[in-house]
Length: 262
Image 1 (tube, rainbow, N blue to C red):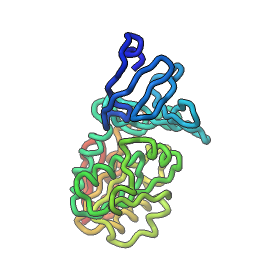
Image 2 (image 1 turned 90 degrees about the horizontal axis):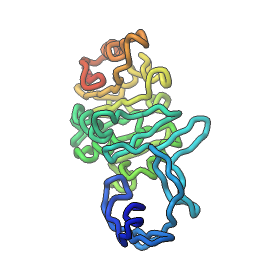
Image 3 (image 1 turned 135 degrees about the vertical axis):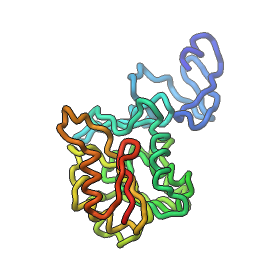
């Protein structure tokens, strides 16, 4: 946009919502206008940082409350997020949204009631809605992640889903005990890495997952592919063994485990 201004252009056409929509800005020396609202030109912008206009200034979409959490752009449009510099979604080879779509397809959500244990930016939920899910109950414990969702144009708005998406601010490790037996047709489990949230990889938690999913229901458990040489562990196969003990048939799929309740 600045390049267009500096070459004397009066207009610039592009996207300011990470590729969701396209429109035209009116360019002037001291300001620019977008959809009838005037904005000042920002000062120097940092790489790998998204910004919002709030309280008459441009602010990075980030927060610090013990940990630094920020929304991070990707080449694919849909952003990822980081906590203390650790990327929470895969982006190297595919859009995090497309990655979510492939994983969601494994549990075949159309017409079903799905449990989304760790909602994050809501990409699993958005892809379930896109695929025709009947209802999805999504849990997210981190208030700052929920704040990022309100600023991310790729995150689904529960208010715009006719009740199909229920977003709950709670730790699913505790909340799962309140969920009904066989209350879900499928489960999507995308926990943080083991070192951060080991309780979400425990036999106790997997037993609860087996309790809340109906017989024949599918579960996809994201594990990633941690380096066995440096970690000394084979996390995907450890997860598969615990899920089998809880009552699932298991197999490795994509970067996780696909399981079916026996």
